[in-house]
Length: 535
Image 1 (tube, rainbow, N blue to C red):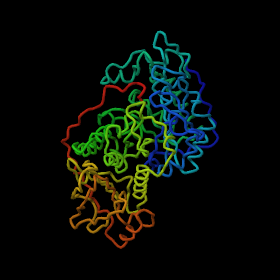
Image 2 (cartoon, helix red, strand yellow):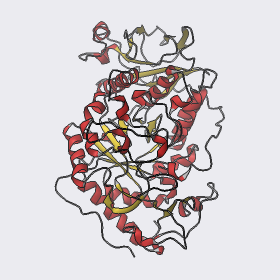
Image 3 (cartoon, rainbow, N blue to C red):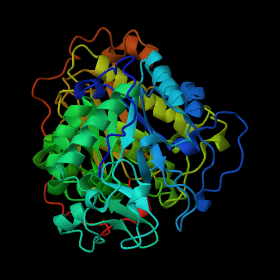
Image 4 (cartoon, helix red, strand yellow):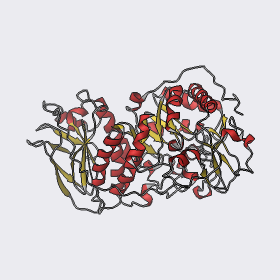
């Protein structure tokens, strides 16, 4: 039976109790704890293919917070902290943290309770947030019934604490998705019976204690679609902090339904279209216009109910299949220019190109945490641009809904005042490409500055509100009014040039979606990922 042997809650201190509105001001850096940094700077080998622990720790993260904050990130999402299955399995060790066995203990490979508290404290001293990855769907086992012994798990340690054994066969059958088990006979993820009121009560007490003990500011919820929807509201109320759910699916209506029971979800449907739109110069950018419309139609608050991402630990890194750096930059830029909270997966700033799991979980210490590299500098500019937009007193950036101002099959302009994100999939081998954005949303004569360009190139809005754009080698553009840059170190001279322009405010009601809604969404989602990649 369930025992009340929960993680001891040291009620000293209090969480920052960060809520949705607080997180909307943030950008998130996701890392794999075991692969980000060691407590000592001795480096060392780490073979991703071996699927073994490489020695990353919470203390290692503390040691390199300057590296993360220097890029402009003010929230850090760490791997699940609970104790995982020990030893080697058919699919390697549980270095990633997604094979829990004991909710009452921490993963000692990552450090001690004091180390995790120290990480939380270190982040908060910098004004940064801690996001903890949480699993409630399952525990991991190397056997299945009747051979499975349940007393190895805590606090759920009898057969009645779990759904009857069956592996998911049909991912279109929601009952199977929620009550059957993920995995196979080599490593099964035993599905916890979250319909049982005693288990629900235990979980609600547990998450409250975890948030309090470690001063957690937000939760990333793993395998959300494998747990009944009505479990989540009370669980999250007990947590008392912001949460984002992982619903790995390409259907907008299916994924959007979960925004009714939690703050946000990762916008997986958009991610599938984002990758396809920039796969090569022949791809169709109309997929992104369609995505904007479908997200608005199917998510509680449109894309404001989402966290945007371009890579994560479950999918091959984009440079493993997209070899044009301008397309890679454009993919990342999209996630910063819209309504979702932007998230970056560690290693993107270093240009890592690992393929499918486990090759996409490389050790970062191989880079020596260099900040003098192209993508690190580029991502720093994206964070600066977003923070400038947030700080613009003439705008309501967070509450302004992003709209597609103009689009073609190869170009798109996304307006979220005061930011105008302009992208092409023409690639870096293309000559200069001319395009006119017909519905920019800005008044005539406003000076716009491309804050991503090295020279901080400017353009003036034409008398009809249009903006002429020249794509140079397929480079993405993020425009801000020159007045938004006043009193900042970003494009200083260009900002001063725009201070005399009194018509730089947003033209009220000027943002109208031009998105085409006739694009057909082609499903590329497999029925299920391998269980070791579900996270």
